[in-house]
Image (tube, rainbow, N blue to C red; front, top):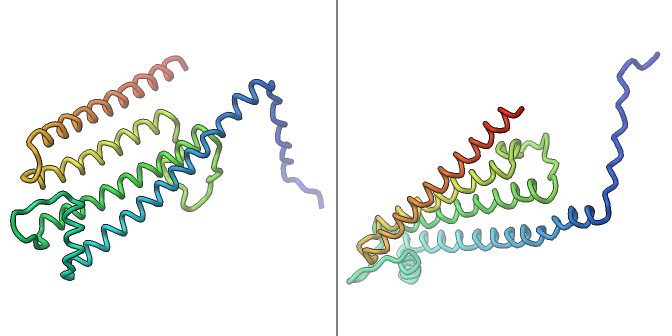
Length: 204
């Protein structure tokens, strides 16, 4: 019985690059240690998260030493003996959320940056492939990173407003100004990418 299935064309041989072009293109692998270093930083953040979480749980069960470490880490000040209260819990939880958001930012930089600037990860068809990785490029990555930074800045600003009585007045002012600057920067990046996308469509 004859096989009527279409024959698959053999893959085209890769184009042979000029030695100088090969060297310059291969230099992208110098970024690999940078991404590996970010993975180590991610592990440090995981350790920091669990350390703070353990302190919070121990403080909830009345451990004075854990409470003192927790209060010191969130920057809470009191004139009398400190007891675990809603403000301290909220500041501790916001600190944990802050760690998670920075960790998400690291993942975007590690995975998206490697995929964009170094080499393909060949995740097509993988059940755990991030949805945003399907259409990632330098422009999309910039917008996503700017959005993530705004989220992190928002968490820091919320922590400042909750703990404003224990901070200098100019601290809250400058954090608000910096947060607004992040917002305008993200809007400028998004607007620039949108204008460039329209320009490419008009030329096509």
